[in-house]
Length: 79
Image (cartoon, rainbow, N blue to C red; front, side):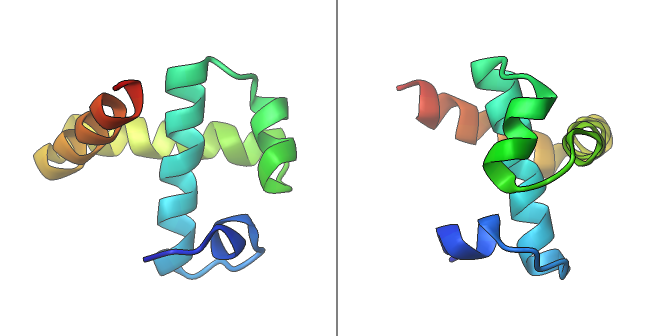
């Protein structure tokens, strides 16, 4: 369980950073929000959001479990 405060924090450990990247990716994918807007939500530079999208996209293409997790999140959000 990761709190909203943790997701929006400046913490950089993987236990917080990875869920944050996933959240950025999902917002970008589902809402088609700009990098700058997502960066403002998370208190990050737009290039950080671009990096998060690239990281999750790459991981989805190479890791079946990540792809299934992302697809499951997208399906749940769209319901």
